[in-house]
Image (tube, protein in one colour):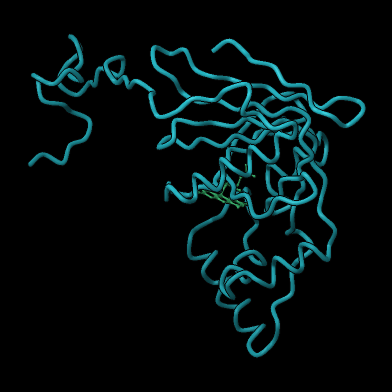
Length: 235
Ligand SMILES: Cc1cc2nc3c(=O)[nH]c(=O)nc-3n(C[C@H](O)[C@H](O)[C@H](O)COP(=O)(O)O)c2cc1C
């Protein structure tokens, strides 16, 4: 059996037209979305309760990495970038994730705290887009989460200069081993360059795939009095 994933059988609808056997006809990859629907009448006043329900349904459905979200930041030059991180807590209406404050995303957020978070649960044909403002979580909250992490992840967080160039993997492993030796028999401390961000949402959009690309989209927008405006958007 061929292990070359860049080629398709000539009879396959995915086989590319014209350009040779190594091309895949991406336009032929197409799926109808029929798993559910979202009705106006089912929308709670607070989008956090709908988010919680969808997150729990993703966990119950055993989708891969149900807490994974794409985090969008903007550089000081106004250029957007994204990367995946894991949602680690949701409290007081805020979405919490942990990272290196000196990473690329950290340097963006230090200059521009506006942020987007996107969850995609393909198995449920659902996505949620959140936009809001980020702030660092209090040090005590980062400490509490850091101390729950496995020992080796704590060492890794201390030594990884996240997002900066490395000479080699060996450089990373040497730092890891040396740092691990320093903490034998002691509680590994959280480094100041590592901690949480809390995202306060201002806009949350729920998307449920429907047949014929007539998807359900509902946007919640935070109002000055703290309530949320709800509206249906065209797919
Ligand atoms: C499934 C998955 C989960 C991840 N979770 C985290 C996370 O919780 N925190 C983190 O800093 N990076 C996480 N990463 C790595 C980030 O995507 C990214 O490579 C890293 O944070 C550096 O990003 P930056 O250079 O844009 O700052 C995860 C990657 C994947 C694929």
